[in-house]
Length: 117
Image (cartoon, rainbow, N blue to C red; front, side, top):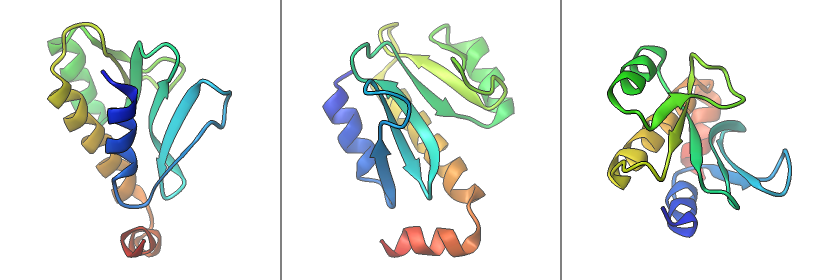
């Protein structure tokens, strides 16, 4: 996966910000101040994505490249390994799912602010 293409995809979404809150390697994408994707820009081994808990289990059972979130809540986050043969469209689909989960968890006022940006 090309990090610039992935970054451009994420920041094109409504209200998305990017930062390096942990160190100078882990790029974090947020909507409404809440994380939806994290990726190590030097390693590019995996991306952490928020996921509906039931879907997270299903994806882990179906795809060996999807594992419980590294350094994250294992019920709600998946680590999606990028160099294990997954089609990129699935990674983008799951990124959308993660963004949507976070966006929908925001208070209505915050959602309206994000949509107005």
